Length: 170
Image 1 (cartoon, one colour):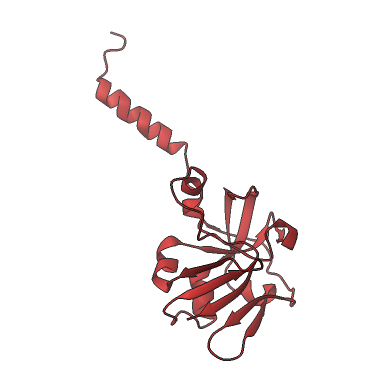
Image 2 (image 1 turned 135 degrees about the vertical axis):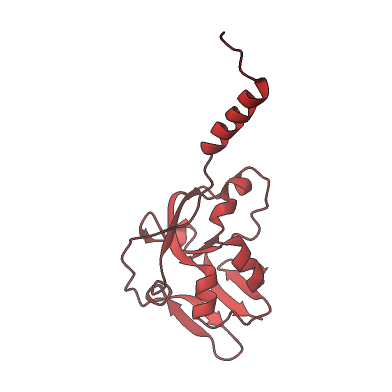
């Protein structure tokens, strides 16, 4: 007899199929070649003298990518390094908190524990190329697993920063 299945099972099956079609953007390892660009893109301050950091310095770490839509309009493949690996490699994971500063002086503060939990990506490239300053570069900070929630207005985008030029350990 047609249509004699249990309605609760049909509802659950529909929900599961619907969830399967809404993948959350996740970071995947990238096979892009590392940058050889030695021009400074970031100033790292940890107590003493500021240290200038280049794309080559950053990209010596493992590269990851995420295909997502940024709330400022960029849609495509974002490539970079895990922020957690970056702060560990550059010796600022000891800080109580880190201050991220954009070219327009926009500032956010993140604690190392929060960085580990939220899976931030320090973006060095967009669609395979270095991020130009006219397109929110030279660096961006995004949390790929939060992208859909940010776009839907469920999470504030206040801790995603673009035109990142300085990180201060505090």
